[in-house]
Image (cartoon, rainbow, N blue to C red; front, side):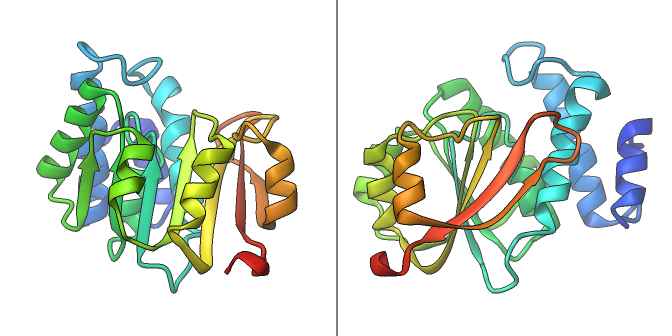
Length: 212
């Protein structure tokens, strides 16, 4: 399998050898996106101009994944950005993706199976239902393309420890319904413009000490 020109350039710039396992997995992921997009609305398009920024964003974000963190909960995973590329590039991660839309959950299950992503699970459930039944404490929690409510954040606090990072991919406004809660209850660790995604940012938070 040969990467398209844009992907080949991205892999080279990222220091990945074309025949390395991560590079081959990313190429396979791109092929699955193109195949499935013909029948499931996963992304805005299938050419590199549409998909390239999503891969660039995920590869860029992967460099910030904490060395001491081994688990990632991704909420509303959709087509798998940025969680799937991050899992490929940081293979030690135990990844769980929560996706309430059936067709997209099936796509993610296919990606996990065909790419051989061990330690990765898909939950076709609403976030509140999943959190109610889960006892897991997460090192990192991420979301993009949706706004979390105050109730969501309160529930997620129950699944966080002192070092848990909350990764919020967002546009000009924070991806929460209650920005004042973020200002009051969370500390900003890092914020930067996403590579490849104009007007998008990655803001990383952790809980205020009084909650941990």
